[in-house]
Length: 266
Image 1 (cartoon, one colour):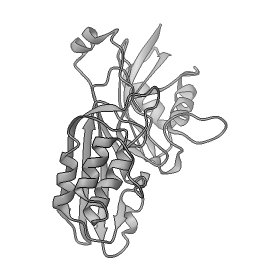
Image 2 (cartoon, one colour):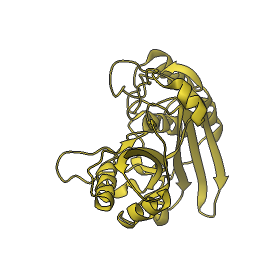
Image 3 (cartoon, helix red, strand yellow):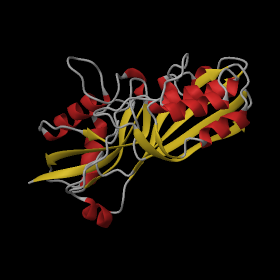
Image 4 (cartoon, one colour):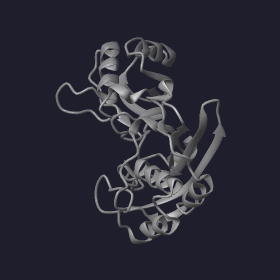
């Protein structure tokens, strides 16, 4: 009998063109994971992810599902799939979960973005953080980030993956800053119901512009209100971004949500 499996997936996205499978031999997370599962089970599968991370973006808590016939225990399947995955991708856990959908059942996603302010390059962080040499105004960045909490139209920061709805609810938008031996590490966490395409990276870039003084708080707030993208603000580099976690209701709560129209999500 075909069973649905739910798993948490971690990966270093540096060598991949994003999560979503693409035409041809383009390396993607989804394509590599599907290939590993096929080798183990001798069955073609479609892996569904909770979010479609961009090229170069990493994950600690991506959640996936797939359907296969499997006559052994879950732990054996976990070990077998990981044995067929490259070193930069690994399942963290797995279990059967009938009817589960990683994207539609999710109630929140948490992303983390790391910025390092240092006088010199930090080679060990080159694939893990956006490195900035200019000092940052922490207080202004914290204040700007706080403006995002709540229900807003985020048209200024991204585009919907489908349709026209650009309204999202942000539960958390905060900076954590700590000194290091080489400078200052800034970690930004944002948690929301769902995100627009490129939304987190554009938000981070805008917040850094505020911290550097090239964008005022009034301009940042005005963009949020008007829905107009800010001139000169590009996307923050992808390698500083990590999909940290995806939040779900309990199994009992999920049963009560079945049949509800899912939110648009990227």
